Image (cartoon, rainbow, N blue to C red; front, side, top):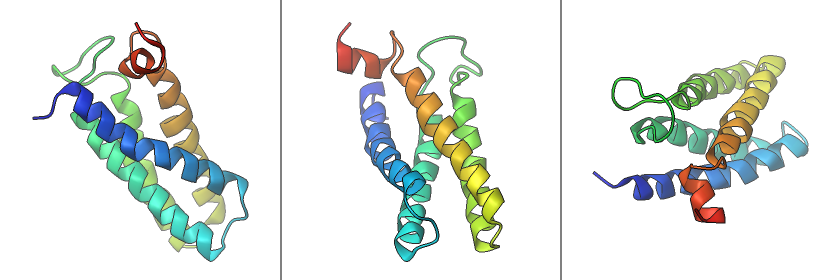
Length: 130
């Protein structure tokens, strides 16, 4: 089993490109072929990171079942939201798709990313030192 630092690096390798792709998608015209292609890549990255983060043990705060923390709820939210948004888009339910994608971006990237940058977290230590 990889150590905590290796798991965090793998997580960053998926979530950082997802952040940039998601930001681009939020700001650009919707429904274009490029939007659809990048959207599939974004959803794939987010789904992978949602599942993958379940394997990273909670390092701060209360621990449930010897492994999970509150932040893992955002992983579960991601795992549910990605397929919901995908099938909404396939069914041309544009409003439902948009709501899910905004929720995924805000919850899965902005809120979770903010938690990751808090003092005591590994990413905070990597970026700003102890």
